[in-house]
Image 1 (cartoon, one colour):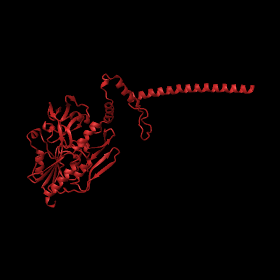
Image 2 (tube, rainbow, N blue to C red):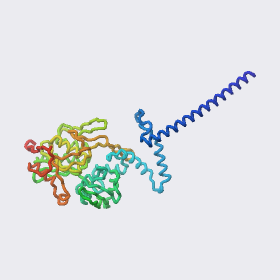
Image 3 (cartoon, rainbow, N blue to C red):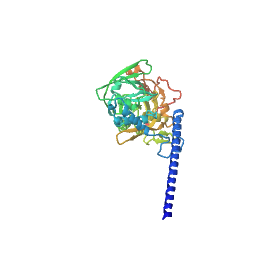
Image 4 (tube, rainbow, N blue to C red):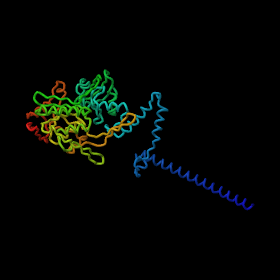
Length: 440
């Protein structure tokens, strides 16, 4: 019994000693790890402050993980700091803060066409494509970091007030547009029918800034307008590539076939674009089985979009009218017809919006447009970098605009009739659109 008792005491002492040793080891390891973490923290801070990189940047990244050591706790720390210390905290709206954070995330990419849209803006974007909304009736874009009028829509408040394609918008209701995003600008310009918005604009070749007051209205846009002229030329004006465009254009094609005109004028001036598929469908009425446009991705992958194989208008002499307000899908059509020699292009160099956006919709009604590729014409010209240069460069001046003259349209008619036109034609232009109509 005595030996058993001594043995138990010895074991207990040994266990106590082991526990004390383990505690010291743990404490020592904790001090070491803490010290190491402080060193790493200090290194990380120096890396960020002085070098501009984050630790872990060059490590192998697992799929679905972030490539750099980013602490998302910082987001909530900033959020809490705003809610706790902002002077007018009673005016804060958490949903507005949340959507604002998402807008900032997307805008940090630096691409004006990659944008986050809250539910209100997303609904307005869908209304645009349907062709019905309330506002001034003008398409806008960011050109050289400046808010720019791409195209005032025909017979809409913006055009009636004197707004023109290419006008630089410096302020909206006396608020500077410096650094503004497209969706923010649209939100500020739009408003209920009957209300006013004041735009401060700078026009090319003018020194002074002019203020234009525009009374908003209900904008209902029929995207295709046609006219069989008395001289036997058929005019097709496409204002947008929207939901109704393909149906209306098909009606125009049938009308052309029935009337057998001497030629076609496809007017894409001030057309800011729209659906890619619609642009391909329209191009397919002249192009039978070739590439209409190519999408080029960041990994150099190419996707070619082929014509649909109809080409019902391929034998009709055609002229395409473009200007600085022709963008996106209208540049696809004019570029494709120009590359294949299916049409002469008259006017001014186009806007140069040749990128591809995908639209991702979310459950709360918001959405994000992300630029995923650039468009190339059949001859591999980059629309985004160059725009479409006309075969016959003819301007429409302020004096022409104010006196209701249209030298671009006049030149198109003259060219279709085989007459001489006064133009600064590029030396590379060598076109023959005098196709006989007898074989149509």
